[in-house]
Structure formats: structure tokens, C-alpha cells
Amino acid sequence: MRVLLQHLTKYEYERSVFLAPHLVRLKPAAHSRTSIEFYDLSIQPDGHLIHWQQDPFGNFIARIDFKEPMHKLLIDVKIIANLTPVNPFDFFVDESAQNFPFAYDDQLKKNLNSYLEITDYGPKIMQWLEKVNRYKMGIIDFLVMVNQKVNDEISYTMRMQPGVQTSDESLELASGSCRDSAWLLVQVLRHLGLAARFVSGYLVQVVNPINNTNVEDADSFSLHAWAEVYIPGAGWIGLDATSGLFAGEGHIPLACTPVPESAAPITGKSEICKTIFTYNNRIKRF
Figure 1 (spheres, rainbow, N blue to C red):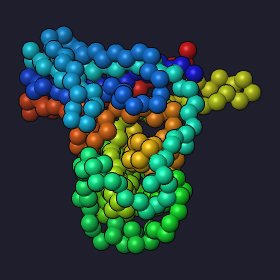
Figure 2: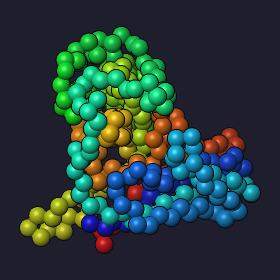
Figure 3: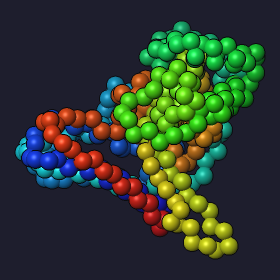
Figure 4: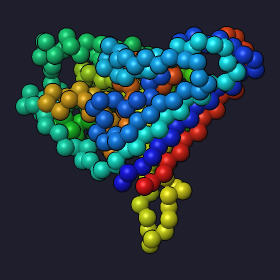
């Protein structure tokens, strides 16, 4: 199924303001398993320069430099994606990593160093980790178990406040946004000796028609967050703690980084003023 995705972000300022350079991380990553047939990023108003670059982690970033002050800023992304079903378990695992626990070899561990850094040592996450079954088992079964365990214990809530909760905050509240669950899973995996990274991306959900009913209005896509874990042979594997499932064709990664702050979809500053922020996501089959 081919779909057109449009993600429009708008900032409206109470007066004409100067903007510092903005970084936009809204281009599908090179390792996306979903085929991207078309991509376009447009910025309004005119009077700006776009320079494409890659960050240290290989993510595509558009740097926007503004020449003139403005009353509003529009960031418009259009994508044509081919949602060909993928088997999330279709990967090869090296013999050395067939079972958990396993150890990365010395060189690989050095390469993955930033994805092994543990920042959350609160009492809640340490108590939670004590309950994790660490007896030898197949690595796929282990990842399924841990991902599902986070999903079972953290209820999803839409949270508009900026930033990401600590692992202990999410466990104390037993709830969080997708980014909170993703960060908790990243920290859990690192505590268990597995390299993990935070992913910001799009989640596309299409409804299968039943009895020839037109259900296109029920299709949706939105910004989302999940985790990826590195398994030798398989590479990076996506785990969505919000659903308890492995990432599939509906998961389109945009930025994958060691910490959530580096994966923010849009970063930038303006002069101090009252700002109205709105966004709109549209999906169309064709």
C-alpha cells in the first residue's frame, strides 16, 4: 500500500522576531525498512537557507538559517511511503549472540560505547531489574519478554510537557508517553548489558477494510518514539514498548541517538515572545 504523509508544523509569534538557526530531524533514516519513494521538506516564509548534513550518528539533519525576522514559521514535510509488510523477526543472529546473556567482543563494545552508557540508577529501576529473568534463553525470546514487561507496567498517556521522564518517574507513575517508555526500555537494556538507542520517528497505522467498508478515515500517522537494540549479526532491532511489539513497516525512523535530546524532531530558538504552536498530520492512500 502506498501512502502520502504530510506533517505540518506551525509556529505563530505575537510579533516579528529573529530566529536562530533551526535543526530539523524529519527525514527518514537510511536504515528505514519502509520504502520511501518521495521526500520533500519546505519552509515558509521565504528568506532562508537549507543545508543538509549528517550528525555523528548518521542521521539526516536540515539546518535552517533565517535571513529576516518573521511572524510565523511553517515546516512542511511530505513523504510517499510504500507500506510493504515486513517480518520483524526476519534477521540473522551471530552464533555468539544466539542466547542471552552474551558479551560483545572488545572492538564492537568500543564502537557501541555511547549506547551502553547508563544514566538511571534510581531505586525503582534497580528493584525492577531484580525481577528480570536472567537465566539463559534465546535472545529473541528474551527481547520479547523485556519489551512486553515494560509495556505491561507502563500505561500510555499523551504528555505535552517537554523532556523525558526518568526511569524512576515512569515506574513510580506507572504511565508515560511513548518517549518515556522508549527511554525506560533503553536504560533497562543497557543495565542488562545490551547496547540500545532512542529512536524518534513516524508511526503509520492503516486499517484493513472489512466488507468493502471505506476505512481510510481511520488511518493515522504521528510522531512516535521507540528503542533499538544492537544484536551481532542482526544489527539494530526496533522494539516498541508502547505496543509491546517489534517495529514493523509502520515504523519509520527519523533520528536514532544515544539520548533523547539529540533526537528531537525540531530544535531552535527565537527571541522571547508569546508563541502559538500547532501541528497537523494527514495520510492519504493512493
